[in-house]
Each structure stands twice: as C-alpha cells, then as structure tokens.
Length: 260
Image (cartoon, rainbow, N blue to C red):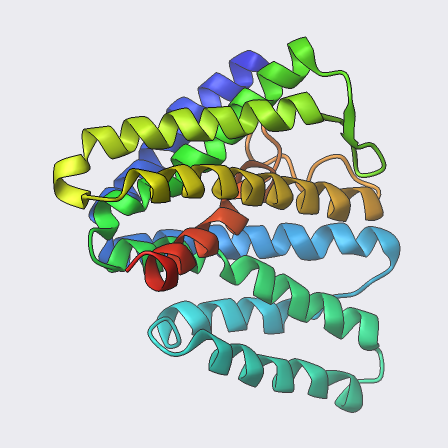
C-alpha cells in the first residue's frame, strides 16, 4: 500500500504543482478535469443507496461554471443552477427530491475546487495557494502518524472509527509547523502578521479535518470504503482531496474578508 501511495505521488504531484505554478487557463482546465472526475465519484456512490443523481446536468453545470461562470458571483450561478435542477422532477417524474437534492449537493461540493483558482488569482495568490496543500496534507499526515502511535480517545467513532482526539491535535501541530515555516520563508514578500498565520494554521487544520470527516460520512452512508480506485493506494479524487475541498474556500475567505 505504501509503495502504491509513493508511486501515485511521484506521478500525480508534478501535474498538480505544474498547474498551480502555471495558473491561468492551465490551472482552470486542470481544476475542471479534476472537478468532473470528483463529481462522477460523488454521484456514483449514491447509486449504492438507490439515489439517482441527474449526472448530465451536474457535468454541464461544472463545465459552464469553469468556462463562463468562473468570474461571476458564485451565489448567482448556484441559484441559477438550483432553479434548473429543481425543475427536472417536475418535467421528468422518474426523478424525485432525493435525486435532485444530491445532484445539487454534488455541484456545490465540487465547486469548492474552483477556490484553488480563485486564490491563485488574488494578490500574492501564487504564494498563498500553497497554504491549501500545506495545511491539508500536513494535517492529514501528522494526524495519521500521531493517531496511529498515540491515539487512545475516539474522535467520531460512528463516522470514522480510526480517528482520535490525539490524532486531531497532531494534525493541528503539523499545520502549525508548516504555516510557520511558510510564513518565515516568504515573510518579506507576504508580510503577514504572525498571529494571523497562527490563527489560520489552527482553524484551517480544523476545517481540513471537517472536510475529511464529511467525506467519511458520505462513504459510510453510501456503504463504500473509497469513492473510486483511480489513484492507486489513495482511492479516488475525493479520497485524496477531501480536506483540500474544504480548506480552499476557507483560505480564500480568510484572505479576502479577514486579512485584507
């Protein structure tokens, strides 16, 4: 399993990093592709419990959002999409409210990916975008190893039995260390107050863990272990990027409305 994880990272990480460094339409196309794969995974697992998301509307919506709606007010786009989706069961009786609700939930959830691009486009975004991965991956890594060796108290046993409070604290520490190092390396360019970085590292880690738990909740309710097998050793796109999906909009909101 570890060899598969390492092999996948060697192949996948350069693609992610290249898109982040390039930015612009290259990053947008990369995010659109990842979003479509992630949305397919999300819709597929719900079929295990006899819910039939309206796949084609979801896919068209994601493409529309990246091609036309990326620069528009996100809420306006979501409202328009909701009107279209909620009209479907009126016209096609084979779909019910559960189907339309999960269709809409999938679109909103996957649109979180777009915030990676939105962060990349803001002032100093070419640097700030890396905080998404520093917080998410160091939280996951430290939580895993601390939980494995020191975990005693269950965090959310009904959702994810292996997660512990000790692992959660370890994840926060990992995020804290990564953010402090990042702030030190780029202190001249970013000039971010250290107290804001500390606050971001702690709250961002908690958000990352909530994102992880949400994905676990979906899988448990849909009676599946992984969203897919597309990434050997990791599972699916949503298995690998579950915490990133929540951290991305959080960091965008932080640097857009909290730390201006």
